[in-house]
Length: 264
Image (cartoon, rainbow, N blue to C red; front, side, top):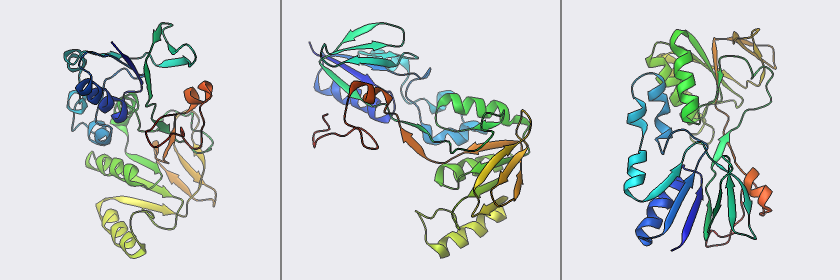
């Protein structure tokens, strides 16, 4: 019987486990993740934050579902070390597992630009279930939120906050919103529509410092403008999680380099 270990329980890891089980009915499949929750809909976090969905609504596969498929899921126990020569991994809890095949599906993490004050209370990214839960708990008494980044995820989050009665200011370093998705005219029309919804935009804005002593009070831009708000959501893209791959000695270039069969 072959043993398959999967590092990560995002869409790649979770779907791979399903396909492996379809191909190998008897194989021993283990998924390791640092998350406390099994596979969920990340794209629907904004709806959860404003109370339109529950955690149950977000969950795609429960622990019982994994059990029914004969898949072992190790929550809050990511792989921390891999011995490629022995074909063994060590998890965060200190247990060792041998493998025949190891799938690296470690995903990415939210990128936070070098802005002063990101450690203050009220600064969030929205990447994990833990992020979503923390943001929901904090946003209850917030009247105005600031989005650092005017991409799709950030704007969708802003739209959800507006539905909850929270005003939203968007700081975008480009001269227009969604520069990768729409042209200048489309951006102008969309911005007008969104301003009528309650958004305010600070274009050509580079965030310099998050204001406030311990809790967010606003953001100061490098050109001197100040944006007031009690909550900051950083939506500046994603960086790949490559620390484990680097420790294994795998070839890295903005991610793990593989052949045409996705093998290292």
